[in-house]
Length: 222
Length: 311
Image (cartoon, rainbow over all chains, first blue to last red; front, side):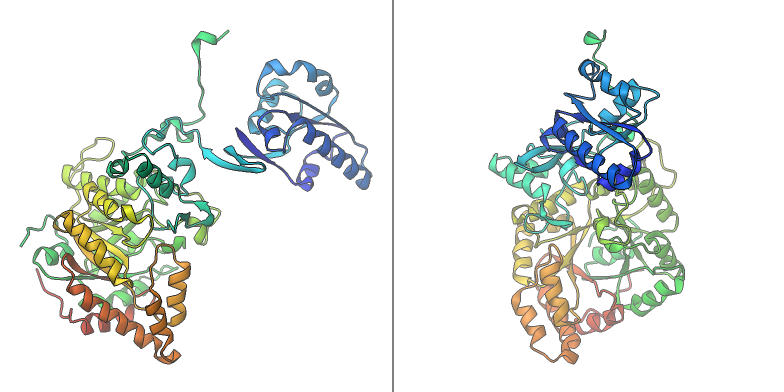
């Protein structure tokens, strides 16, 4: 899922303080799981903005709302009235949702309420860990199911580097060395010999390097 | 005696069967070539080649390539250290061609310290390819005269290709396989991490020898003199992948502060003496960090001076 983190209220206030009617708009899927951008969090942020507006003596009306996903047209019907009402929308979705709103409402000011952080898993309640960088050409089959692109600070294909330190990455003791994990996993699978296979140079054209990406699934194109 | 494949002085010394000696110099944080020339002049007669570090610890410095070119101009065999952190495959190939145009005949392929340790912690890192793939890339450029994109190289580089190895880091089970992998990728010489735990190093060498790796690449044992007990502790506790045994720390701490530097040099010389007896050790890489002026003393006391002239 996509993991995000709420921006500090100060930054949010600077973005929206000039508007009279602000809709704080939750996205109730990924960013709700990390308790940062769901419909519940939208209510909280709206309430903080109201307090701030009062403190500042600003005449701002704030509403909260939300839908299941801000990245798909089909969920928007229930929110049209709120969006119509607003002078500006503070979206608590990831960057995808924010931009989807921009595409859908070309003249409506839309601002991000979150910093979109990464694609990750829920390691345990409240802990989210990056595990994929959507490079467009999955190599997990070669690396024992652990991704060095997302989880090695140098995205090495033939690691570990000299900075691997007792199972930790050189940049942070709390961060496991991905290549240490890969080696242990290959060993556990009885595939340690595979470690010596040289990984060939990666084609990054399917990643950010190749420019913005698009996937068209012809069968389903209306 | 093996036949050298490149004009590298280091390779010629190794091929002739001598124990080789290399050292390294860090370029200045400035533009004065004299900074690097001065360091090189002080040690040139005591080593076969001088490594120039590539923005080590991710701190911005004069580039390795320009520094190596200055060394070449004074007739010193330079080892161009090149990290994959800062350059994509276009820049790497371009710099290799540029280095070869200055007759720089040695390259050490590294991934580089993470940028978060340096003076541009907020910067991007590149890591388009990794150090293992850089080894393959340089070998392809030299041996096949081809660029990655397939283009032919007019006057292909003649470079003696090296890699780093750390016998001490975890996971231990892949220390020798990792060496084997670098050699399979095309590394012809290896410079190791600084050795303080000689026993552990010997185990690693034995295993490497059993696999025939010492027949396929020259292994230069890395040594770094300790300046103080504080440095020993720092290396032990704070530098990733460094194995400084307690008895070394104790020995440094056991002499008065003003004698510790001397003790550090003595330990370094004794380490070299012991390692000379280890089959498979082809030479030494003396890394006297910001202490280059001590290299001549270490080399002399270790009985490695004068350096052979191999034409």
